[in-house]
Image (cartoon, rainbow over all chains, first blue to last red):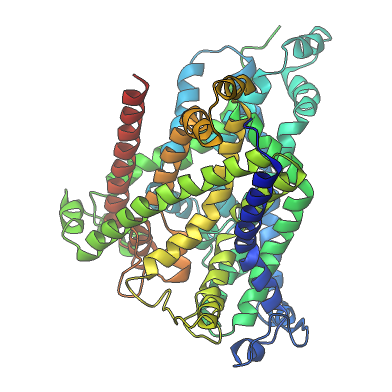
Length: 273
Length: 293
């Protein structure tokens, strides 16, 4: 890389520090405001730190505003979306390790679906799920985004890099194809499973559009839909809104900081051609 | 022996789901766009009738749709260059430092990308609050004697406020794509340039940025597609207002489809958006080809 002397390095470090501070100020302000009372937020006297730290905002969300239900729904949706991870892995394995009729065509078809905008499929998918009586069900919320072309592509890339010999050895011992996949291929794919698992979790936790469209019944709302509702019904209660936002954002931020190594290196896997 | 059936069994569930939820819907959308399907039609299919290209001619006369197109073009022209320049700059600055502190900055800049859009939209709405007591940005401006600015209430500024949030969120992932590409530039290229006495600026302009060509192309295409579908920010923060100043094409489609239940009309809008995305992608592919010649 380009040689950089110490002085320039320090200047770059300072520039990035200032820029980085602006990047995380919204999070810091969100967390601080979540522990203030709304009266303090709207008062003329402004403090950076809460005058008196309070958990009342969180208590109201869970005791009076159904956030307990939304939380459970979000956990269920996130758990269900892991089924998709295995379907993607299976499809990626098939594309990487078998020769079969129509392989090229099917793979192009999978890649082509990446180009289709959500707005085009939104209405027909709603009508399909409505026809199947799957609106207001967990399954209906999860199904449209269960498989992802990008996920299949990443698994294919990864499995292509594993030598065929591993699988042949198992087959010589008389193992079935499913045994080869579950007992040989999957354990070998831990690095990519880790990345995809984390991304699946984030995607499920953050899912917004499909729960919004498919769930009309509050019983099936997820945290993001509930949060959006909060904005309409408690528009002037900023403290309450920030508590709701913090409850959604902080778990993901903590998980990201703990697991950042896997996420950031995962991008290097996908960056290779 | 490899079984002949196995690959099809492995593929079946994923391909089936992609077919039902991605490919089939395109044809359904095309069909619906030629009908007057609405909530009544949903309950009783005999009440759906064909209207030919009626939806298309009506939507192109719809002033709100025209506004949505203009706004979306505004988002694309301002947002795409901002995202690319800023994410590439951060990636290069981090790479120049190359130690633990600089790697940590990667985590900082990536963090907005993984957070929930509704949550951060609420946070930014709060930061953008027009009152000098409540909104942090106006509080800070007041310290230097400026403002207050109606970030989301002034029709001239509202679009820019949404772009600030979207750029803040988009930098992380694109920075990672550039970072990955920077790793693959061979050191020998820089060493040769240093022997020829090239300055740091020259090395960045003549080696680093040209070597990032493929990833830049990738980021340009995906970012344009993303901004053409700009939806959650205006939906959560302004609901398209004030006075439709922030409505995007995607929000227009959602509103007509799911709030007004004009499925046929919304489907027509969505297909026009799809065509725009395909054209934008083809144009990018062409430009890229001309460049490599």
